[in-house]
Length: 140
Image (cartoon, rainbow, N blue to C red; front, side, top):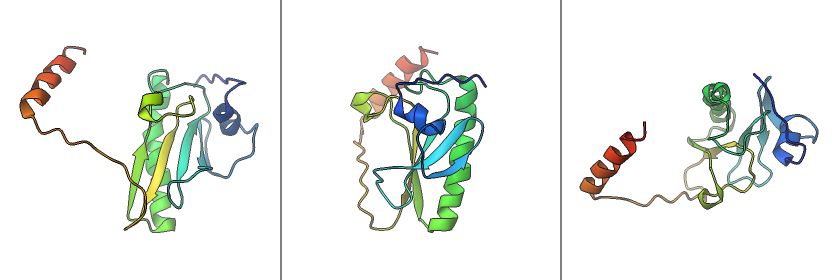
């Protein structure tokens, strides 16, 4: 896969070995490192070795492979840490919580009664959901 490295991007430097990391996994296209500000014990991030600011910019061949890396690393986290669950999280844009503009996927091990909180807002109006689904389908 073609790799683009942005010399001004800290995650490009981490992914490509310019800055040392506590890596748990690496292949030709990705490096998985321990998060410097973990939400839970074992929190890691998957970094593509090519620069893409967000999901919309990530080349398809990386998109196809990144969930395989998430599954492989998530399985090892579950076995080694004996966590009871795993959040796989990826943010796009500042309003969505993205703070570093190099696509990355969080692997957040979850434990019973941990302090990690991800808040979902319920939407119960099925009519609005059906109308919205129709509108979105028109975009394909």
